[in-house]
Image 1 (cartoon, one colour):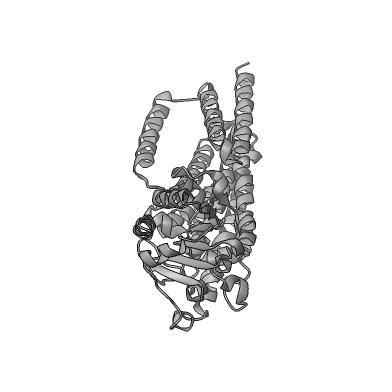
Image 2 (cartoon, helix red, strand yellow; image 1 turned 90 degrees about the horizontal axis):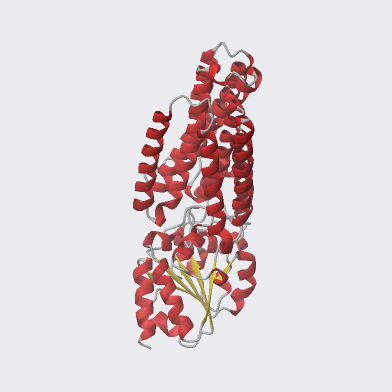
Length: 462
């Protein structure tokens, strides 16, 4: 009877997870979807605590208290600009937790005696392989996003080492599953997976981090699903499968948005191509025109349509609220304002959407790349705030460019483009931006927040 009640609760939790994911598909229902997902997790935790196989509620209580404390501190202290790093860290912790749980099951096989031995050992090997690689890969992603690691090794030897560690992990995991008594195979597979996670993530450049975050999110879900098979836990299997599938779908969307295959992303080929790209002097020499807030403000005196293109520079400057105030001022003067959002702008999927939502920007003002590109021709002034590679015309026009073929926001088709940026430094792709040297482009150099604030003040004085 108890087992049936627990499974019924797990089924209810799974239904809530599915409804929550459905709600997250739209910003209008995202809050409700998030609450439904949280409720589903709450139900799943209560059902698990009712299991008669729980050995120590005191230890669980200490774990809950410690985890809650860490989570509360992070929720309060982490800035919105650091959200990509936080997501990467959470992916790693999820994968590491799955690997630890699977390892504990292998060491105390009597605790899961109701699970067939073949299922236990195969799923344990899978959980450790995926979870360990997710842990180290996510830590590297965190370090790169945080700016404490810049190393991106390339070359045949490195790729051989990376591929070798992956093959070693799979082979040793298979040998353990075939002969569970030989624990050195298990620990060897774990170490090889940890090494591979590090090597595969360190080869990826900053421009591809949105794809890596989505992939690691999927891997953390797959590791959880494998751990569900270790214990025969239905809700872990369902929840992990949902996270794994949604992460893979998002990874595919991100790759499509960059017009690159997942293999290209993981092999770090963009850095190699960027090394042979045209230098900045060839693109910018004598062609870049700078402007001042007062001069730029004059462009909005007769403008009818303005488009704001946010990028990572807006996130770094924490300028989303200032940008909202700027847009409100333009609208009060009869200017139609639109926001053009590129799917890989920033450092994680949906980064710009999250920042603008925090600033209470109406979602119906946000346009994706397919909606916005045909409308740039009717835009009087496009304001680019910290975006770089996602507005580079070389992706459309220069077949020798390493980002050629990547869908971009075609801001260069606007009548006038104002680019707010600290300098002419390249984006994550490491190549100069031809937009900066266009005849219709003006550079407003400075911090994103301060530049927008000064531009707003200048418009008020017109």
